[in-house]
Length: 237
Length: 87
Image (cartoon, rainbow over all chains, first blue to last red; front, side, top):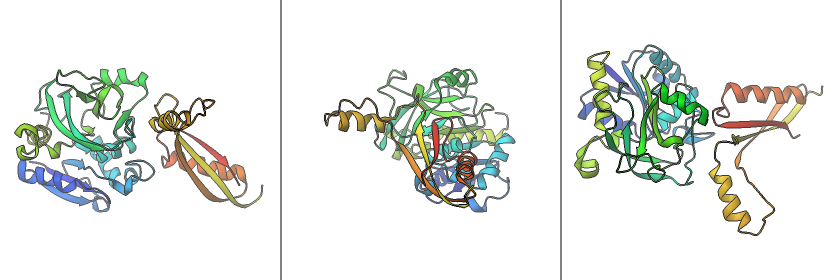
């Protein structure tokens, strides 16, 4: 069984939540690692948690993206190891160039804190391989800069490469504008790199991995961590 | 070439095709509401003003342009920048 690093940046604030789910819920061997202390690619998977690294100054994720720890994460990504960015972690992966596009200020100009429905668009990633295609997961968001942006002409390429992992949808599983909480292009909530091993999403699966913390006693977020555990247990799963 | 300290501004804006809800809100809910109908669009952005030691204004501008690209002062997927000498 592999070992997971949760990387802590100054301003991370969902690091302990992620660690708790990893250790106590999916029973992973996991360490909280201060970003300056991550100097070797010794772990089998990496999680960049949510928060407000460096106060979101300049742009959310832009300063953390220059942390030397991201060099290690890039190395891990090149090795094919699973890398997950949640919320601010997603923004950091985008700013570090590990994922394409940009994450801009919500179109509402408001901090959005609400439950969302996510449709699983691909199960090829190490974080969705235990889900079913078009399965809907209820997972909350909490962000001010969550509007995923990529020039429209590049969206078909993202689609063809199966890099769109989650879309915000309504009860009928349709990606309508009403179901889009932040104005993301094409209702995109999460994407992966071409290879599929690096994934980022704005919603917080670690806040929906315990029934007591979730809507209708569901724990939909857990499937993301369960998928990762499955990948670590059987590489190639 | 005049060695000295130059004031250089970097203006970061969303690309024309990337919506700018802040600019749209300022335009619609403040400027047009205030009766300034001759204003037909507003784009909001970010301004960084840097003091740079250089051998001349061109060098100062080039240094700031380079650091903006190298350190990703803007995200080229969504933003454009203007670099200009102001003093």
